Image (cartoon, rainbow, N blue to C red):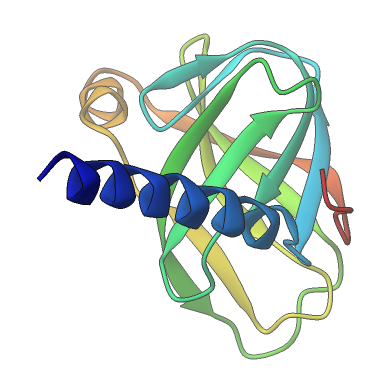
Length: 146
């Protein structure tokens, strides 16, 4: 019985190591500089450089990660179609009072954007303050394997 347990653990570890290189070969990425702190999902992200990737093209889930890898969060989104392709890549925020929330991401040349789903905290903020919308320029490109 112990031999089967050891074999199962060994196979699990091998599977994990074989999946890591695949996850690192993401070919779509958006980068931006945020001169202010903001909320992405339920995480407060400090001002700094960020990259946004989609770990699995089949999921409506994005990874927002600081360039140094210290801060990261997964956020859910819904695709939003537009009549024509986006003229530029940008990241849009909604600001309620002094608090910014990641709102959407558009990629130059794509005819659909990504609307980030509101969290309960953002819904609560929306009830107490009027939102102003502002955007930051973003760059799109490829990500090298880490």
